[in-house]
Length: 519
Image (cartoon, rainbow, N blue to C red):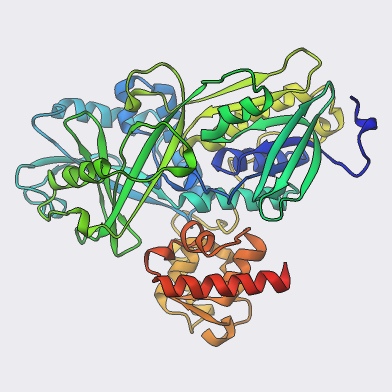
């Protein structure tokens, strides 16, 4: 079937992407910025799967050194500072405390690993590793007296779901079509293009799109997408590993993090989280079943509580848990015997039945820190595949560009976050300092897009509690694809940690009425 035989009402694109997680949105941004026409479909909300269930870190992966993943660690460490510069509003540096456990890895091995961690990734701005006397340092006070020596090193925190949203937003501003609650239900491969059927998950209305190349960036659903294309063939390219976290009231006062070794050779983190809480995670075990239906198990809750209690003086129990989240990571199936040993590196595979058939690129594995590199590698393959059929686009293609282009709202220096907060507070003096900080952490310089000419809180419209006003909600609906209260409270603001059921219901009803009258 040729393009000219398609219905003229069918929109045609260079690239069709399945999956609205960090990889799909990162590829969409890079491709749209190079001049390709891009259509992305996501069956749920952006970052509704794996990309919002991480430990919220941009890091090299210190423990991956034990598995000789030197290339991955080097790439991740290099990306750590690049991403910090691109998004200093949602990414900020952290210091991690690694207590030495005398019955586990020896101190010399930890120091060697941290020496490599400091030097193989081209660290420029983050401070280096130091050795601590935990009997006198403030970071030793929350710990059991068993821990006398420790190490302190650098990594970065990230608002993972907002990182996805900012990539999608920048992709859209470069011309990409970003479609949430849209599921690709049928894929027909032809010699010169793909014919794809999309179903709106809210209205169940179907539409068709044609594209020259198909990108399968669906994460845990990657094999399912391949099965849709070829129902008779079973695909086992990925293995699912469940990672769960618990959130408890703040355990300690300082702003540094902990990385704990455990007797099973796994590690867990304890991280200050949204001022009032401590985030503890993650677990690491094989998962079988529907990726949409993951939930933390009692076994995982007990494991995380026991891990924390083996280090902290202040003991926690399941009764202390404020919230939990659990998701599955799709790791490339490299045959590793244990979940924690499976590679976190990404694998890209081009699928075409013959040299003339329309190509498909499958994305397996990867980690949030290296998403931008994954996108660049994918674009290299796209350029090779489309070179002959898309000469005009490639003549105009500006090549690699995402390394230096700030993400939306991130157009200020890595040392200018406090200055940016202060300026926002100065320009909108009715805001509290806490509100100015929250807006800057979420939206950076784009907070002004919805604050507009407001001079009082009343100018921001109806209040939904905890500093969430109508103008911000309208912005999230009109600009960031939010549809439900859950989208807003958990993936865009994290205010869900504070909201009571009645407040959630009030927001839900308001959104419903707003959408009925405006969408």
